Length: 426
Image (cartoon, rainbow, N blue to C red; front, side, top):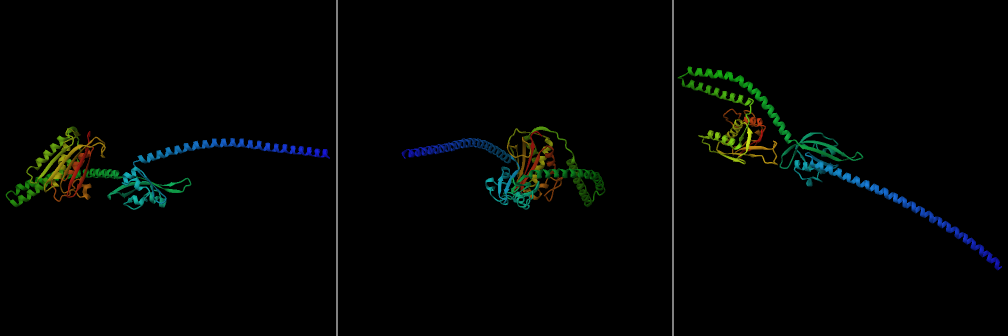
């Protein structure tokens, strides 16, 4: 009985041992599988980490590239002389470059975040703007409009707009590019004036030649008639009036022919101070015997400054300006002549180096609505005019012949300033 029990116990131990061995092997297999999976996962993790590092490196490169592109674009927008304004879908300004600040006269810090029409006010309606483009979808190309800037001044602009679209072709806003047309408009007006004066000059020359011969005949017949009526005081006085009228007309014809003649410039270097002194001396000679109290003051910034010009024509131009100033001060006043080199860094319509000559008076001034007409032949604001009426027109012609420009600034009741700007080496 004991041996049977021992045998049974031995077999049971064997079974348990086999079961333990099988369990151990199973556990060992599981451990081996887990280890293999761990190694596989570790390898996969390393591969993913390597890929992630590559992606991060590419992303950092892309970010740097985008940053450089953004910086480059911002540099372009900053350096542009044209104004650039961008608005979002609601018309709020999101970009305002320095040129826009300069032209509009509004700082970007104030403009950003505001509605377009709160910053840029149009003098001719709300059309042709980024705001209109984003609201209607209509793009504009090189359209002209006027805007009102600080102080109430109006500036002509050329406007181009475009919609801003995202990757899905959805509208994100609009951008507007504009530039100031003021200089171009002035140049157009100057060209029109040159063309008008050229046409008028040709016509005047033709008319003057046609009138001159009959005038000579009228004067000759009037002289003969005066001999016939000699002794008759009334008739003689009437004939004298005819002769005086003929002489005045002849002077006008001669002046007109002189004006239309193409001047040959005799250029040479001359001291600017000497040129002005000689001009004022001639003008002072004309003033001798005049009861009107008019003083003349000369201010020279650089007494040794020289100018390359035709001294005769330039002297005559200064005389015409001074005589114009004198006629604008029937009750007396002061004529101030100031001349110097145009300072470096200042806005100048001519390339530097250049010189300026100012003739300023304390007279009646010129109304704003006729200032663009004063250089036209025979135009005058005076009720009674002596001379040919070609003084300022001749000044303008002389300055243009020297490659210069002339500007006028006047305030009624205060006075007028004529400013001639000439290249030093005309």
